[in-house]
Image (cartoon, rainbow, N blue to C red):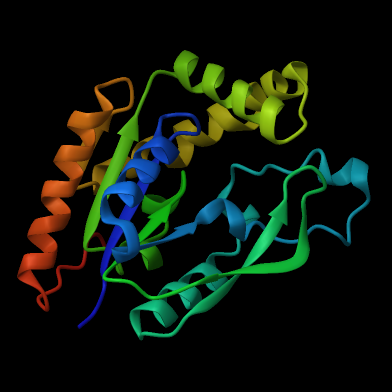
Length: 213
């Protein structure tokens, strides 16, 4: 029986990761997660100063082919080894994490719904939205705490690439969503909404609806 695939998209800082954490807590061993952020291209071949100016919010910065290949492998019942990415150096570390096929596979990332090859593999597409000022504040907190960034660099990147790419790719991809959620809303209510949709999908297996085109 094929896994049910949930695609979760939305702007950086909209609340996707919090929602995924809640979903995996409720689903337990029934869920695996592929994070699109783990599929950035390895920039070890570039000088450090050039890596700093790459537009990491453009679809071309991500290894779409590898993510699609890994998703197909999970759907075929095969585990995959996802590259571990170092956001401080913009390189792959050479280490991997093993992801096992599960009844539900969650694919998380700002551009998940902007990639046709991914949309075709989704059974449920969810978009989480939040105003730009909320997304910036959350991104700043995360990048300073977890990725060794400065507040000035986060602000500059948001203005130079994050906001423009949101307008060009991320925001418009919401038209492909089956569910649109308010990232400022009650987390428990949002979780209930998504879980109800996932439960319906699982009860309808093996029928599969391909979301998007």
